[in-house]
Image 1 (tube, rainbow, N blue to C red):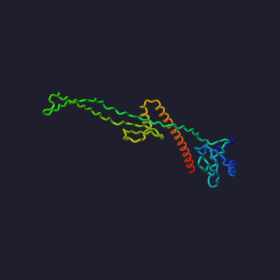
Image 2: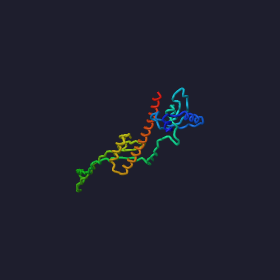
Image 3: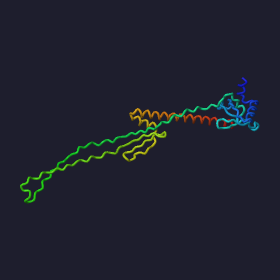
Length: 243
């Protein structure tokens, strides 16, 4: 019961003297924030300095995270033995994919209708022999001249390329040697729709693995930002109470 009353009432005169002696010996004793400290109650800190209580009621300077802020003795209590600061467990980094697959959707040109070659026979009249020539010889045979229809040239091949690299999906298109669309970024949902058109199980598994890695990275980043926001809000609350 005595320990409970001390924690609720804050640091006693005897405990403050023990903290002063520890600071003089080069140590930084640990303390725990009481309910009077507000949102950070239950967190651990280290006393780094004792200022003049005649100047301000908050004269116990405590290091909390990266900040060193003054508190009133009623906001603090001696930390129990063996207490350690609670830190967020960092998840193990996921191994990066060995290779980043590149998907190409190639659209073959539609062949033009095949045209049969036609041969046209052209009859040419025999040349008339000069007077006195060709008498007694048979008439000249007509000659045939063949003509072949020219096959029309089909359109150049169209290539659409879907690429994943550095966390982004890009799409490009070329026709022959002409660039129709330079690589531009598209949304993952649009990339998934295009990949769904490819009936290859290996491609689907590779895309699902990529999406799983990106989802975990986004969740980890969100957790980190929420933790930083909570720390900033706690500091803001302390500054408001001080004001």
